[in-house]
Image (cartoon, rainbow, N blue to C red; front, side, top):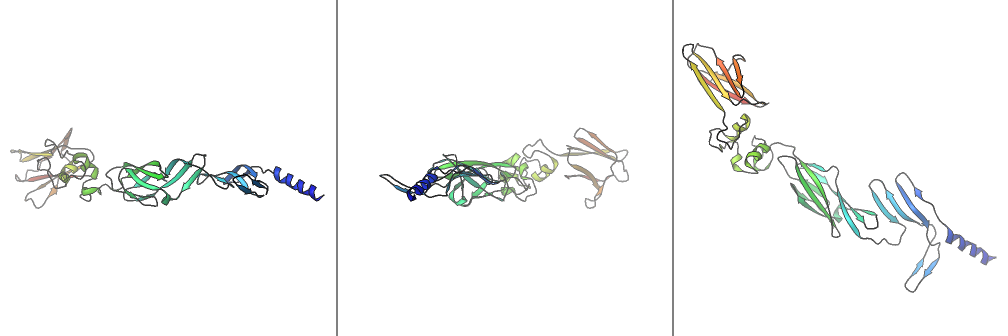
Length: 298
């Protein structure tokens, strides 16, 4: 009778199977009970099985990961490396944490620690990446593309990023000089001393700061702001003509009798012809006057 009971127990152990398991966070597919406590022997190894272990493939939705469970060991090769970041934009001068996942040849994934990955800057205005995967952006004059790489066991993954231009006057030797960096790069390239505010690069007598405010080309001698005063002797009247008058700017005509005290013309007697504006001074009480035009941006 004891022999029969032992035989029945062994029979139950060798035929026991478990169904699939699932929860809100993961699922275990193709689960089954292991070798039922029996010993398996061959010329090369001895294996003692046990009851109750679940083996199969488990998946987790967030963070996305797939792994084998219940096996003595998992033999795999790295098929590819996926580099990630959230978001994939980084403000100039700021930092962004990078991540990496190894995609294995058995369709499972392995989330890597930042220190397990060899990080490098592939291209773009990034000043470096720490050993833990923290990328740092340099200053830019406009939104600029960048690329990073992560290497794990000789397999390299890449990710494209965008460095966002936050400040308009903080790039290279152009930083803090009162002229937007993008304007200076447009006309002079990167870090060119000729782009300094007080430089008259084209010899017109109007420096770069004035030409920026007036909307002119600082590299073209023909691009100048011109003011002309015409006197009508009999009436002791003057016309002040200036150009170019461009959108996005305000123009204020002022007059003075002594170059010390300046007064603004009222908003009448003004005519426009394309980019040319004419202001009439009908005050004939003084034949001697000086005029100037103030240009400003909102």
